Amino acid sequence: MDRPRFSPPEGAAEREAVIDIEAQSFALAPPDAAAMVEKVGLANFRVLRERGEVVAMALPIPMGQWYGGRRVPMAGVGGVGVSPRARGQGTATQLMREVLQEMRGAGFPLSVLYPSTQTLYRRVGYEQAGSRYEIRAQVEGLDFRERALALRPIRETDHAVLQDVYRRQAASRHGFLDRVPHIWNRVHSPRNETAYGFLVEGAQGVEGYVYLVRRRKVEYKQELVLTDFVALTPTAARRLLSFLGDHKSLALEAVWSGGPADPWLFLLQEQTYQVKLLYHWMLRVLDVPAALEARGYPEGLSGTLHLEVEDELFSENRGRFMLHVSEGKGRVERGGEGQMRLNIRALAPLYSGFLTPEALRSVGALAAEDACVRRAAAIFTSPPPVLPDMF
Image 1 (tube, rainbow, N blue to C red):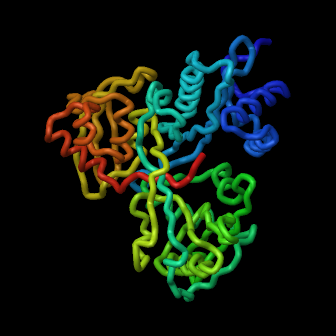
Image 2: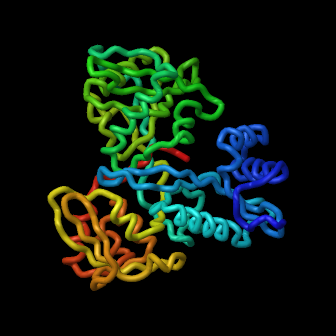
Image 3: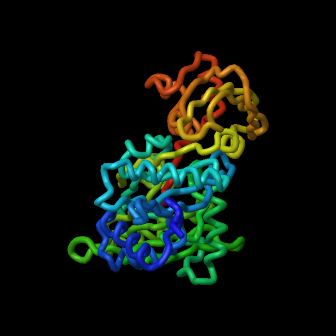
Protein backbone atom coordinates (compact mmCIF):
# COMPACT_ATOMS: atom_id res chain seq x y z
CA MET A 1 0.00 0.00 0.00
CA ASP A 2 1.31 3.45 -0.91
CA ARG A 3 2.03 5.73 2.02
CA PRO A 4 0.14 9.05 2.24
CA ARG A 5 1.91 12.16 1.10
CA PHE A 6 1.98 13.55 4.65
CA SER A 7 2.09 11.56 7.89
CA PRO A 8 4.43 10.46 10.69
CA PRO A 9 7.55 8.68 9.38
CA GLU A 10 7.40 4.92 9.16
CA GLY A 11 10.13 2.28 9.26
CA ALA A 12 13.90 2.29 9.41
CA ALA A 13 14.45 3.91 6.01
CA GLU A 14 12.29 6.92 6.85
CA ARG A 15 13.91 7.19 10.27
CA GLU A 16 17.28 7.49 8.53
CA ALA A 17 15.82 10.07 6.14
CA VAL A 18 14.60 12.19 9.08
CA ILE A 19 18.01 11.96 10.75
CA ASP A 20 19.75 12.95 7.52
CA ILE A 21 17.51 15.99 7.00
CA GLU A 22 17.94 16.97 10.67
CA ALA A 23 21.72 16.72 10.42
CA GLN A 24 22.01 18.67 7.18
CA SER A 25 19.41 21.32 8.04
CA PHE A 26 20.81 22.17 11.47
CA ALA A 27 24.52 21.38 10.98
CA LEU A 28 24.49 18.49 13.45
CA ALA A 29 26.74 15.47 13.51
CA PRO A 30 24.65 12.42 12.46
CA PRO A 31 24.97 10.80 15.93
CA ASP A 32 23.66 14.01 17.54
CA ALA A 33 20.79 14.17 15.06
CA ALA A 34 19.96 10.52 15.76
CA ALA A 35 20.02 11.14 19.52
CA MET A 36 17.66 14.10 19.13
CA VAL A 37 15.20 12.05 17.05
CA GLU A 38 15.34 9.27 19.62
CA LYS A 39 14.76 11.71 22.48
CA VAL A 40 11.78 13.40 20.83
CA GLY A 41 10.26 10.20 19.43
CA LEU A 42 10.04 9.40 15.74
CA ALA A 43 6.24 9.22 15.79
CA ASN A 44 6.02 12.87 16.84
CA PHE A 45 7.57 14.10 13.57
CA ARG A 46 5.67 14.67 10.36
CA VAL A 47 7.16 14.09 6.93
CA LEU A 48 6.27 15.10 3.38
CA ARG A 49 6.88 12.56 0.64
CA GLU A 50 7.42 12.98 -3.09
CA ARG A 51 7.18 9.83 -5.20
CA GLY A 52 7.32 7.81 -2.02
CA GLU A 53 10.54 9.40 -0.71
CA VAL A 54 10.80 11.67 2.36
CA VAL A 55 11.75 15.18 1.24
CA ALA A 56 10.82 17.34 4.25
CA MET A 57 10.00 17.11 7.93
CA ALA A 58 8.60 19.12 10.85
CA LEU A 59 7.94 18.64 14.54
CA PRO A 60 4.52 19.87 15.75
CA ILE A 61 4.48 20.31 19.54
CA PRO A 62 1.05 20.49 21.23
CA MET A 63 1.15 22.87 24.20
CA GLY A 64 -0.38 26.15 25.36
CA GLN A 65 0.45 29.83 25.65
CA TRP A 66 -0.73 32.48 28.09
CA TYR A 67 -2.54 35.57 26.78
CA GLY A 68 -4.27 37.99 29.10
CA GLY A 69 -4.04 35.54 32.01
CA ARG A 70 -5.74 32.70 30.14
CA ARG A 71 -4.20 29.59 28.62
CA VAL A 72 -4.76 29.29 24.87
CA PRO A 73 -4.11 25.88 23.24
CA MET A 74 -1.20 26.33 20.84
CA ALA A 75 0.76 24.08 18.51
CA GLY A 76 4.42 24.98 18.29
CA VAL A 77 6.37 23.99 15.20
CA GLY A 78 10.05 23.11 15.34
CA GLY A 79 12.53 21.07 13.39
CA VAL A 80 11.37 22.21 9.96
CA GLY A 81 13.83 20.86 7.41
CA VAL A 82 13.95 20.07 3.70
CA SER A 83 16.24 17.61 1.97
CA PRO A 84 18.93 19.52 0.01
CA ARG A 85 17.80 17.87 -3.23
CA ALA A 86 14.24 19.21 -2.76
CA ARG A 87 15.00 22.83 -1.91
CA GLY A 88 13.92 25.76 -4.04
CA GLN A 89 10.85 23.91 -5.33
CA GLY A 90 8.14 25.05 -2.90
CA THR A 91 8.55 21.91 -0.79
CA ALA A 92 8.66 23.76 2.54
CA THR A 93 5.48 25.66 1.66
CA GLN A 94 3.70 22.41 0.84
CA LEU A 95 4.93 20.89 4.10
CA MET A 96 3.73 23.82 6.20
CA ARG A 97 0.31 23.83 4.55
CA GLU A 98 -0.08 20.19 5.53
CA VAL A 99 1.12 20.87 9.08
CA LEU A 100 -1.32 23.75 9.50
CA GLN A 101 -4.23 21.71 8.16
CA GLU A 102 -3.49 18.95 10.66
CA MET A 103 -3.11 21.32 13.61
CA ARG A 104 -6.34 23.16 12.85
CA GLY A 105 -8.10 19.83 12.44
CA ALA A 106 -6.80 18.83 15.88
CA GLY A 107 -8.49 21.86 17.41
CA PHE A 108 -5.56 24.24 17.97
CA PRO A 109 -6.57 27.90 17.50
CA LEU A 110 -2.94 29.11 17.36
CA SER A 111 0.46 28.04 16.08
CA VAL A 112 3.84 29.58 16.99
CA LEU A 113 7.37 29.10 15.65
CA TYR A 114 10.82 30.64 15.48
CA PRO A 115 11.55 31.43 11.81
CA SER A 116 14.75 30.64 9.97
CA THR A 117 13.21 32.71 7.17
CA GLN A 118 10.16 34.95 7.43
CA THR A 119 9.27 34.73 3.75
CA LEU A 120 8.25 31.07 3.94
CA TYR A 121 6.14 31.43 7.05
CA ARG A 122 4.48 34.65 5.99
CA ARG A 123 3.45 32.79 2.85
CA VAL A 124 1.28 30.48 4.97
CA GLY A 125 -0.10 33.13 7.33
CA TYR A 126 2.41 33.59 10.16
CA GLU A 127 3.57 37.02 11.30
CA GLN A 128 5.83 38.53 13.96
CA ALA A 129 3.98 38.49 17.27
CA GLY A 130 6.49 38.64 20.11
CA SER A 131 10.11 38.65 21.21
CA ARG A 132 12.85 36.70 22.92
CA TYR A 133 15.70 38.70 24.46
CA GLU A 134 19.09 37.68 25.84
CA ILE A 135 19.92 39.24 29.20
CA ARG A 136 23.58 39.37 30.29
CA ALA A 137 24.15 40.50 33.86
CA GLN A 138 27.60 40.98 35.32
CA VAL A 139 27.86 38.60 38.26
CA GLU A 140 29.87 41.20 40.18
CA GLY A 141 26.84 43.50 39.94
CA LEU A 142 24.54 40.96 41.63
CA ASP A 143 25.58 42.30 45.03
CA PHE A 144 22.68 40.99 47.13
CA ARG A 145 22.89 39.59 50.65
CA GLU A 146 19.48 37.95 50.88
CA ARG A 147 19.56 34.76 53.00
CA ALA A 148 16.00 34.57 54.38
CA LEU A 149 15.01 31.54 52.28
CA ALA A 150 16.76 28.18 52.36
CA LEU A 151 18.48 27.14 49.15
CA ARG A 152 19.23 23.56 48.14
CA PRO A 153 19.88 21.45 45.03
CA ILE A 154 16.82 20.24 43.13
CA ARG A 155 15.96 16.56 43.47
CA GLU A 156 14.05 14.34 41.04
CA THR A 157 11.12 14.31 43.45
CA ASP A 158 10.84 18.13 43.22
CA HIS A 159 9.90 18.23 39.53
CA ALA A 160 6.11 18.13 39.98
CA VAL A 161 6.24 20.99 42.50
CA LEU A 162 8.54 23.04 40.24
CA GLN A 163 6.20 22.61 37.31
CA ASP A 164 3.42 24.09 39.42
CA VAL A 165 5.68 26.96 40.52
CA TYR A 166 6.57 27.68 36.89
CA ARG A 167 2.92 27.57 35.81
CA ARG A 168 1.90 30.03 38.52
CA GLN A 169 4.44 32.53 37.22
CA ALA A 170 3.84 31.83 33.53
CA ALA A 171 0.09 32.45 33.86
CA SER A 172 0.84 36.09 34.66
CA ARG A 173 3.44 36.54 31.90
CA HIS A 174 1.96 37.47 28.53
CA GLY A 175 3.19 35.02 25.86
CA PHE A 176 4.85 32.46 28.15
CA LEU A 177 4.40 28.77 27.37
CA ASP A 178 2.37 26.23 29.24
CA ARG A 179 5.19 23.73 28.94
CA VAL A 180 5.00 20.10 27.89
CA PRO A 181 7.67 17.40 28.55
CA HIS A 182 9.60 18.26 25.36
CA ILE A 183 10.11 21.83 26.60
CA TRP A 184 10.93 20.75 30.15
CA ASN A 185 13.60 18.43 28.72
CA ARG A 186 15.32 21.48 27.22
CA VAL A 187 15.39 23.01 30.71
CA HIS A 188 16.65 19.92 32.55
CA SER A 189 18.86 18.40 29.84
CA PRO A 190 20.19 20.94 27.33
CA ARG A 191 22.03 19.37 24.43
CA ASN A 192 25.54 18.15 25.35
CA GLU A 193 25.54 20.16 28.60
CA THR A 194 24.67 19.67 32.28
CA ALA A 195 22.06 21.85 33.95
CA TYR A 196 22.36 22.18 37.74
CA GLY A 197 19.13 23.01 39.54
CA PHE A 198 18.64 24.87 42.85
CA LEU A 199 15.43 25.88 44.59
CA VAL A 200 14.56 28.25 47.41
CA GLU A 201 11.84 27.54 49.96
CA GLY A 202 10.28 29.08 53.03
CA ALA A 203 7.51 28.25 55.46
CA GLN A 204 4.92 28.13 52.66
CA GLY A 205 6.99 25.86 50.40
CA VAL A 206 8.98 26.42 47.21
CA GLU A 207 9.05 30.08 46.13
CA GLY A 208 11.48 29.89 43.21
CA TYR A 209 14.23 27.99 41.46
CA VAL A 210 16.99 28.26 38.89
CA TYR A 211 18.64 25.84 36.46
CA LEU A 212 22.07 26.84 35.25
CA VAL A 213 24.73 25.55 32.90
CA ARG A 214 28.35 26.41 33.67
CA ARG A 215 30.37 27.26 30.56
CA ARG A 216 34.10 27.90 30.78
CA LYS A 217 35.15 31.18 29.17
CA VAL A 218 38.57 32.86 29.59
CA GLU A 219 41.25 32.11 32.19
CA TYR A 220 39.07 29.60 34.03
CA LYS A 221 36.25 32.08 34.43
CA GLN A 222 32.73 30.81 33.77
CA GLU A 223 29.53 32.00 32.17
CA LEU A 224 26.35 30.97 33.99
CA VAL A 225 23.66 30.17 31.40
CA LEU A 226 20.24 29.96 33.06
CA THR A 227 17.90 27.53 31.32
CA ASP A 228 15.13 28.60 33.71
CA PHE A 229 14.74 31.30 36.35
CA VAL A 230 11.46 31.51 38.33
CA ALA A 231 10.64 33.52 41.45
CA LEU A 232 7.13 33.85 42.87
CA THR A 233 8.09 36.42 45.52
CA PRO A 234 10.50 39.37 45.77
CA THR A 235 12.38 37.54 48.52
CA ALA A 236 12.84 34.52 46.25
CA ALA A 237 14.11 36.74 43.44
CA ARG A 238 16.66 38.41 45.70
CA ARG A 239 17.71 35.06 47.19
CA LEU A 240 18.34 33.57 43.73
CA LEU A 241 20.18 36.68 42.59
CA SER A 242 22.28 36.45 45.75
CA PHE A 243 23.08 32.84 44.87
CA LEU A 244 24.23 33.89 41.40
CA GLY A 245 26.24 36.76 42.88
CA ASP A 246 28.00 34.27 45.17
CA HIS A 247 29.72 32.98 42.00
CA LYS A 248 31.62 36.23 41.44
CA SER A 249 35.01 34.60 42.09
CA LEU A 250 34.21 32.00 39.39
CA ALA A 251 31.92 33.61 36.85
CA LEU A 252 31.85 36.78 34.79
CA GLU A 253 28.24 36.90 33.58
CA ALA A 254 24.87 35.28 34.18
CA VAL A 255 22.84 34.89 31.00
CA TRP A 256 19.13 34.16 30.64
CA SER A 257 16.21 34.76 28.27
CA GLY A 258 13.36 37.14 28.91
CA GLY A 259 11.74 40.33 27.78
CA PRO A 260 12.89 43.88 27.04
CA ALA A 261 12.10 44.96 30.62
CA ASP A 262 12.86 41.90 32.74
CA PRO A 263 11.54 42.52 36.29
CA TRP A 264 14.58 40.96 38.00
CA LEU A 265 16.80 43.70 36.54
CA PHE A 266 14.74 46.30 38.40
CA LEU A 267 16.22 44.95 41.65
CA LEU A 268 19.83 45.66 40.64
CA GLN A 269 21.61 48.69 42.12
CA GLU A 270 23.19 49.68 38.81
CA GLN A 271 22.68 48.97 35.11
CA THR A 272 25.37 46.28 35.08
CA TYR A 273 23.65 44.30 32.34
CA GLN A 274 22.88 44.24 28.64
CA VAL A 275 19.59 43.30 26.97
CA LYS A 276 19.76 42.19 23.34
CA LEU A 277 17.04 41.06 20.96
CA LEU A 278 17.57 37.47 19.83
CA TYR A 279 14.43 36.68 17.84
CA HIS A 280 10.97 37.79 16.94
CA TRP A 281 8.78 34.70 17.08
CA MET A 282 5.85 34.30 14.70
CA LEU A 283 2.20 33.46 15.31
CA ARG A 284 -0.45 31.96 13.02
CA VAL A 285 -4.13 32.23 13.94
CA LEU A 286 -5.63 28.91 12.84
CA ASP A 287 -9.21 29.44 14.05
CA VAL A 288 -10.31 33.06 14.35
CA PRO A 289 -13.39 32.65 16.59
CA ALA A 290 -11.74 30.05 18.86
CA ALA A 291 -8.57 32.11 19.25
CA LEU A 292 -10.42 35.33 20.08
CA GLU A 293 -12.62 33.57 22.63
CA ALA A 294 -9.75 31.70 24.30
CA ARG A 295 -7.53 34.62 25.36
CA GLY A 296 -8.11 37.01 28.25
CA TYR A 297 -9.01 40.70 27.98
CA PRO A 298 -8.79 43.69 30.36
CA GLU A 299 -11.08 43.42 33.37
CA GLY A 300 -13.71 46.12 33.58
CA LEU A 301 -13.74 46.73 29.82
CA SER A 302 -16.83 46.17 27.70
CA GLY A 303 -17.13 46.69 23.98
CA THR A 304 -17.60 45.19 20.55
CA LEU A 305 -15.08 45.09 17.72
CA HIS A 306 -16.25 44.49 14.15
CA LEU A 307 -13.61 42.61 12.12
CA GLU A 308 -13.32 41.55 8.52
CA VAL A 309 -10.57 38.95 7.98
CA GLU A 310 -8.90 37.55 4.87
CA ASP A 311 -7.23 34.12 4.93
CA GLU A 312 -6.00 32.40 1.77
CA LEU A 313 -5.59 29.00 3.43
CA PHE A 314 -8.70 28.53 5.60
CA SER A 315 -12.06 29.60 4.22
CA GLU A 316 -13.58 29.27 7.71
CA ASN A 317 -11.50 32.27 8.81
CA ARG A 318 -12.73 34.52 6.03
CA GLY A 319 -15.42 37.12 6.45
CA ARG A 320 -16.89 39.26 9.18
CA PHE A 321 -16.77 38.61 12.91
CA MET A 322 -18.02 40.52 15.94
CA LEU A 323 -15.86 40.24 19.06
CA HIS A 324 -17.86 41.10 22.19
CA VAL A 325 -15.67 41.70 25.25
CA SER A 326 -16.97 41.82 28.81
CA GLU A 327 -15.62 40.87 32.28
CA GLY A 328 -12.26 39.82 30.87
CA LYS A 329 -13.69 37.37 28.34
CA GLY A 330 -14.51 37.45 24.64
CA ARG A 331 -17.41 36.05 22.67
CA VAL A 332 -17.45 35.86 18.86
CA GLU A 333 -20.28 35.67 16.40
CA ARG A 334 -20.44 35.84 12.64
CA GLY A 335 -21.53 39.00 10.88
CA GLY A 336 -21.27 42.65 11.79
CA GLU A 337 -20.11 45.71 9.92
CA GLY A 338 -16.49 44.76 9.18
CA GLN A 339 -15.19 48.10 10.49
CA MET A 340 -11.61 46.82 10.87
CA ARG A 341 -10.28 45.05 7.76
CA LEU A 342 -7.10 42.97 7.93
CA ASN A 343 -5.60 39.73 6.72
CA ILE A 344 -4.75 36.75 8.92
CA ARG A 345 -1.10 37.79 9.18
CA ALA A 346 -1.96 41.20 10.63
CA LEU A 347 -4.30 39.59 13.12
CA ALA A 348 -1.32 37.83 14.77
CA PRO A 349 0.51 40.91 16.19
CA LEU A 350 -2.85 42.52 17.04
CA TYR A 351 -3.95 39.39 18.93
CA SER A 352 -0.70 39.07 20.88
CA GLY A 353 -0.33 42.78 21.61
CA PHE A 354 3.01 42.93 19.81
CA LEU A 355 1.91 45.88 17.66
CA THR A 356 -0.85 48.37 18.34
CA PRO A 357 -3.73 48.81 15.89
CA GLU A 358 -2.38 52.28 15.07
CA ALA A 359 1.06 50.85 14.30
CA LEU A 360 -0.48 48.23 12.02
CA ARG A 361 -2.58 50.86 10.28
CA SER A 362 0.46 53.07 9.78
CA VAL A 363 2.13 50.36 7.66
CA GLY A 364 -1.02 49.46 5.76
CA ALA A 365 -1.62 46.15 7.55
CA LEU A 366 -5.18 47.05 8.56
CA ALA A 367 -7.82 49.58 7.60
CA ALA A 368 -10.15 51.19 10.12
CA GLU A 369 -11.48 54.54 11.27
CA ASP A 370 -9.97 56.26 14.33
CA ALA A 371 -12.76 55.27 16.73
CA CYS A 372 -12.42 51.62 15.78
CA VAL A 373 -8.62 51.77 16.18
CA ARG A 374 -9.00 53.24 19.67
CA ARG A 375 -11.49 50.53 20.62
CA ALA A 376 -9.18 47.79 19.36
CA ALA A 377 -6.26 49.32 21.26
CA ALA A 378 -8.21 49.14 24.52
CA ILE A 379 -9.32 45.56 23.88
CA PHE A 380 -5.89 44.18 22.95
CA THR A 381 -3.76 46.21 25.36
CA SER A 382 -1.14 44.05 27.08
CA PRO A 383 2.46 43.91 28.26
CA PRO A 384 4.98 43.09 25.50
CA PRO A 385 4.50 39.41 24.54
CA VAL A 386 7.59 37.42 25.54
CA LEU A 387 8.55 33.80 24.97
CA PRO A 388 11.77 32.78 26.77
CA ASP A 389 11.65 29.12 25.66
CA MET A 390 13.05 27.85 22.38
CA PHE A 391 11.61 24.89 20.50
